[in-house]
Length: 313
Image (tube, rainbow, N blue to C red; front, side, top):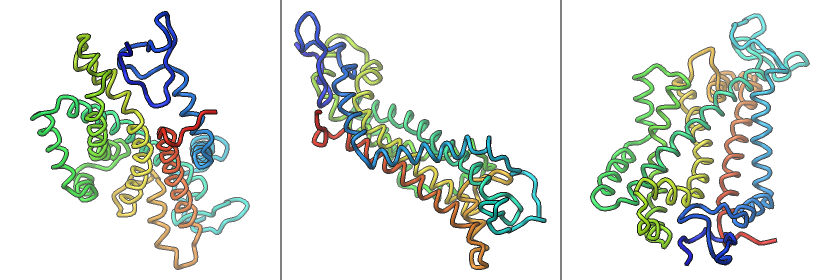
């Protein structure tokens, strides 16, 4: 008897009892059929490959670039302020004398680190919270979801502005604040997915075999909702980068001499109408490309997990 319901397109592992025997009750199959099919669908998606390529290039630019193109992003040098792009300064200098190209690299490190950290933290907390609420159900589910609804009723940006004014802004503090606000949406998505999964045969079989609630949630429900979780995580990276840029634009971002693309964009707008275009367009362009690239990857992952769009070779 098949004790679990595999993912769409999964190939059952062959064993002594025939091809229908699966490795373990409710566990996401290690079967290569489903994984290969998803990867194959993702790899055939041109949008996905463009998104991955852009993210890789931007990551290399931000983290490996400073090793080969060294600049001083700490000392203010007013004697070279607002220089136009040239051979020595490919993207010119800003009002503090910082090399704009080097500052794009350093600012990108902060933006990417924040986006990835917020995505990991909020996804882990939100997925576990939503899975518990959806699986337990009843009054506990109602109370847990009312807590989420209460926080969602408060405008996130307004609450974030209040919190940033209370505490001293720093990269890790902003990561914590954004994570506190970002897990709410994840929990609702995972809860909805778990509500449909908890009535499946593999969950009922796990219960009959004496599996604890903790094991069912961690080993069976969360892994089978991984598609929703991964897709949401990619979008969270983009949203966190945009939120940091918005805070920096409002003057509540990372304090100097730290840099991020949002603060560069905010500072450059003051000089845009004076003809200093290199202070605005480079950070704006790389910010837009980064956000679009992560959204492209998220869309492609969602399509790869859609059975209707999967094609066997």
